[in-house]
Length: 68
Image (tube, rainbow, N blue to C red):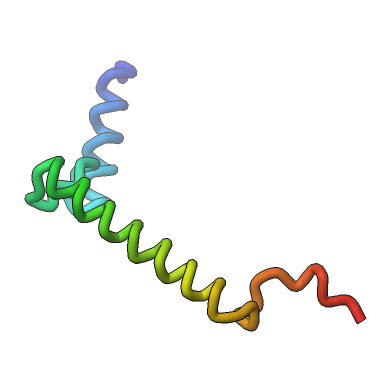
């Protein structure tokens, strides 16, 4: 069996295991729309983290300085 044939067979098997999903995520968005979506998600994440930090340290974050 030639090495190239083995690669092709393995690719076919991998594709069958993944249900024919491709590597590329095609969510129907243009690159600009994707950038806007990602920027909005990042802003929400940073705002949530800032609010959590300002709200108090009772979230169980850094416990290294809580020595008794």
